[in-house]
Amino acid sequence: MRVVLAEDLFLLRDGLVRLLQAHDFEIAAAVESGPELAAALAELEPDVAVVDVRLPPTHTDEGLQCALDARRKRPGLPVLVLSQHVEQLYARELLADGSGGVGYLLKDRVFDAEQFVDAVRRVAAGGTAMDPQVIQQLLARRSGDDRPLARLTPREREVLELMAQGRTNAAIAGRLVVTERAIAKHTANIFAKLGLEVSDDDNRRVLAVLAYLDHGR
Image 1 (spheres, rainbow, N blue to C red):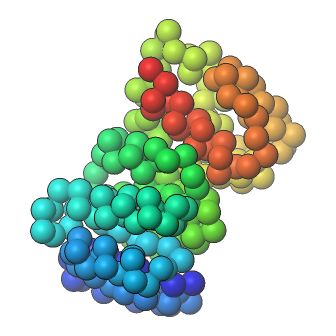
Image 2 (cartoon, rainbow, N blue to C red):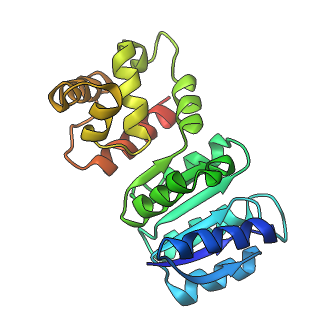
Image 3 (spheres, rainbow, N blue to C red):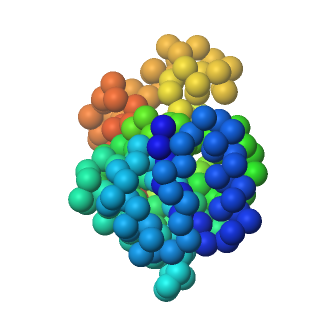
């Protein structure tokens, strides 16, 4: 699996390269700036891009914008974005095209090697890997009494948060120590209460829920 990595801090970039290589990823390129990232994504066509949001020369959202531009040119390009803080605007932009293969993790997660590698693999396979803090903030924005989210029970909200992180029904059942049948029932109730069409595609349902919660004003 070929990876293009963009991170301007040398020590972190080198550490990520070594970590990914240790888990059988091929590093197609490891760059430190927006222009280098844009060129690498265009020329190398990697299986997944792992991208810091803030890169030179602007140190604003250079990395994210390069990744979004690459996804427009190559729809479905898997992108895992790393950020120092939760930036809801960046999360919305990443999810806006409604396709899979996206992730948004806080850099603190990088220090959990197993969790980080699992996120890269999940995104590369076309799934999602959303940081729990991002999900919590998106859900909090939609928690007013006049919102459909308010119709959910506490257990359904818990299931929704885990769904939005990219977990399957089986994984959610294991986490909550209940049966998959119970999770399937909660999932059906969530979609019904949010007015969303039920889908067997886990990635599409997660993106649909996130898009609805964040944009359905």
